[in-house]
Length: 159
Image 1: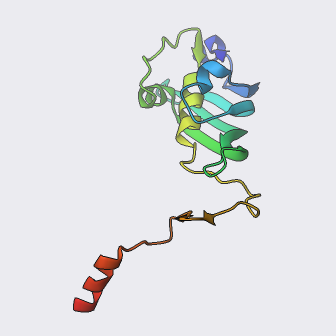
Image 2: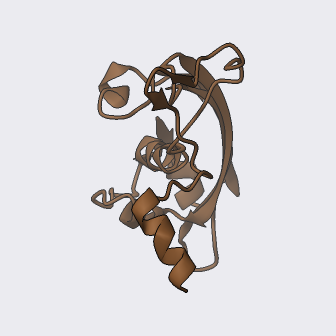
Image 3: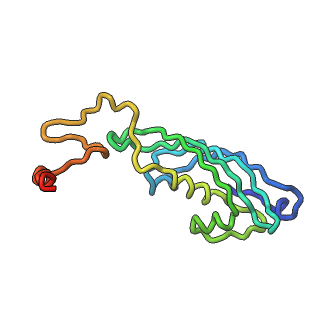
């Protein structure tokens, strides 16, 4: 997502408005848990401060499709991310080589890294009412449940 910054650097304009939709392809999704990430809406502004630092004020909205932790069925997970910082610092945070801020910049690495940080560790589908959670010799454990071995249970009586 290349943005022309020549007029901003030369103080011809005060800010550059960003209003784009972006769909991430398989090359991005292949190393993540994401199944699909389409129509991500990026809005905001690029400005310059008194010290000629490029400032990014961006809002990223979309719906990421993730596999359900229990059934592996696709689950829509809406997200909203707000970014407001100096571009040089944002590039350092994503471990990218700082680009030459002369003519154009690519803000896609910053957007992608912030989306990756928003991926939840666990997502469950809302239609799990009919799902079998126990059977012959097995039971689905919930995070809240604390299973104590019977032999260790006897130690409680000693205290």
